[in-house]
Length: 224
Image (tube, rainbow, N blue to C red):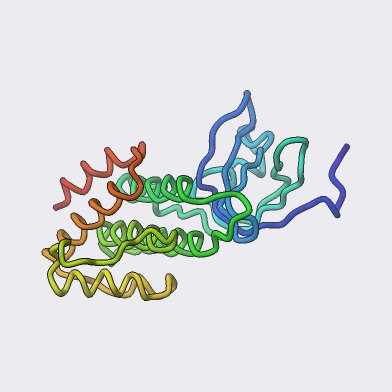
């Protein structure tokens, strides 16, 4: 039975994962404003000329028109407002972005209010695409804010050994709305300190091996 108009669901979100299914289809995972993290099949999206070929790729942000199947959603159409092409064409930026997508996939749940994480992801990808913002700083901000949004940030203690400037920066990240987060720069020594602190927090709280992180660690090492 074909889907009627009343059966369609419109969601605003971003593709955080995509995998091939069969010969021509993809299964995508969307982080959405309305329904949290949801899975959907993009049937025929791997066929040449399919209108879903580009939208069914990671980083695609916009509106997705879905209809419910027997066990999952299906993508009927999509209106993409940002493909983040700058990241797709930049090896370093792509791996930073893929790492952010993995964290979102790890943290978010279906039917949860994931508006904060969606905003953080979108603004972080925009910052990665901006030539005047340091990727390593974007990473620190994303990691720490993601932990904070999920209510797992323990706060900065004396035992953390942060300098006054680094501690102030962490406090700023914690208290500043996502939309205004990427409006500052720090000196190299502070950035390195933030990087060590953020890495320690992620290891303590997330305790998960992300596929893109090993490559990203090598990129960060070569850039410092």
